[in-house]
Every structure is written in C-alpha cells, then in structure tokens.
Image (cartoon, rainbow over all chains, first blue to last red; front, side):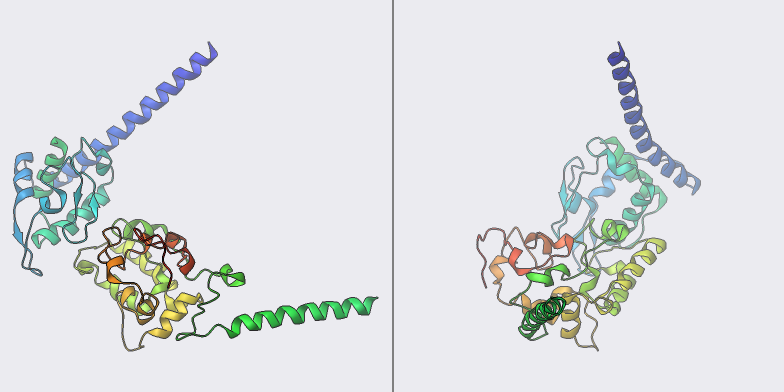
Amino acid sequence: MKSFMILSVFIIFISFAISQTAFAGNNTVTMLLDKYHSEGVSQFDANKGKTMWQEQHIQKKTGKPVSCAACHTSDIRKTGSHIRTGKLIEAMAASTNPSRFHDAKNIEKWFKRNCKWTWGRQCTPQEKGDFLLFFQSQ
Amino acid sequence: MKQKRLWGTILLFGCISLSMATLAWSDGSEWGENNEHEGKGFIQQTAGVSSVNNKAYKNECSSCHFAYPAGFLPKRSWIKIMTTLDDHFGEDAELDAQDAQGIETYLLNNAADQRPNRFSRSIMRSIDSRTTPLRITKTPYFRHRHREIPTRMVEGNAKVRSFSNCLACHSGASQGSFDEDSVRIPGYRFWED
C-alpha cells in the first residue's frame, strides 16, 4: 500500500514536470507572438515563413546566394550543417526539437544574428512571427 | 645528534635545489619554452594555460566552436574580437550588451598578458607588440609548435578540418591541457615528432 502511494506521488510529480516543460515551450512562443502583435503585427502566416525559408539572398561580403535552408536544410525536422564551417545544426521543427523554444532571449539572439547574416538586415516582427509559426507547424 | 640532523636537512635541501636547477637549465628553446620536460615532474602542477572557468563565456562561445582559453591571446586581441562580433571571422556572433560586457571582463582578466602560465608567456614572447593577432593559430608560437604536422593530418583530415579545432587532437583541451604527450590525431595511431 505504501509503495503504491509513493509510486502514485512519483507519477503525479513526473507528469506535472512534463506538462510544465511543454507549457513553458508554448508560453515562450505565445509571449513572443504577443510582443510582435504589440509592435503592430495583426496576423502571422506559417506558409509565408516557409516561403521565406527558401528565399535566396546575395550575401554582400561574399557575393554568394544564401538562404535559411542552405544551412538548416529545407526539411526543418532534419539536422543541418553550416555551409562554411560545417557545424552541425539541430533541427528547427518544434515537433522534433521542442527545447529550442524555451528561451525568448536565445530565440531573439539567433534571429538577430542569422537574419543579418542571411538577409543583410534584421527581420521585422512580422517575419519573425511567420518563422516561429512555421517552426511550430512542423 | 641534533647537529647531525641539521646537516642532513641541509644536504637534502641542497640536493633538491640542485635538481631543480638542472630542470631549469634544460628549459630554453626559442621562446623559453620547456620542451623536454613538459608535462613531467613539478611543472605539471601548473597548467600550460588556465582553463576556461566562466560559464557565460563557455555557453555563448562554445555553441559554435571550442571555447578557446583566454590565456592564448593578449588583452588587445580580445578587445578587438569583442568589438567586432558582428563580423566574427565571417559570422555574425553578436551578443546583448550585458552578456558581452561580462564575457569581455572575464577575457581581459585572464588574457595572455595577465597570466603566468607557460603557454601564455610563450605566446606573448612570440608576438610583435605592434600587432594585434585575432587568430591563435596565426601566432608565431602556435605555428612553431605545430610546424611539423603535415596538412593531410589537419586540413586534409575530415575528423580535424582545421588547426582551430583544438579538441580533435588535444583531448584535455577543455581542462587547459595541451601537452604534447597526450596528443592523438584522429586517423593516425602514432604521432611522434
């Protein structure tokens, strides 16, 4: 009887922990989307994010065409690799790599770096929201 | 009896200091680097370079590459690197102002011109004071120590790719250990120079 009670407390604790983690992930994305809303965006579109993912842009410094997909791969459920350094890049899709979406500061940091590297400018709140929705949809 | 013990102690200390002097004697190549006795005896007690012990630096920098010990470049190099993070060897590695500040403070306090460790001192001796090296691999001391390693073992080796990939061959690199004895080049079982 006692061991049954310990076990059930344990199960409750674990499920609570799991739900908290999942919730935290969604929360971060919702929070960011809310922020972009407050910056004047009315609607986000995962399909738009998917199209932008493939868009080729000429990098000023190298004169070469680059895209998000060039390093992250077009199938965001797969591991990518940096076209120049070869660094392995974990999947972007929320379904395969939910841990990417728990830290708003980290998300904004990489948006800033990678938008500038790939597009030569920072992404707008609209574009960031579309990308986030695209990652969530896969 | 008491005097005998005194003489004994004096003799013992005499022997110890003589043996230390012999060690120091053999300590002299191009940049005052100790080659033969590296990683042996009491010298081992001092790490060649102090290991990275700053969490923010380790987290931020090693999300892309090996977190190089601060003691491999002088202060002026780290200042330049930290002020040009938007073009970090062709990559954008910008940090928010607060994180950048903390990391820069750590790097400057532990830079090669601030540390007594032997690799730090050797690197400092090897670089021209009018230059600001940005790549550890381009410092004369680094090049000297790696001069005998053929390209096929590094650039031509898929498991290494670049001299900047310290961990590929120096398995203790994260602990600040770069001793020659522990070098293992992937794909080459024995490496003797």
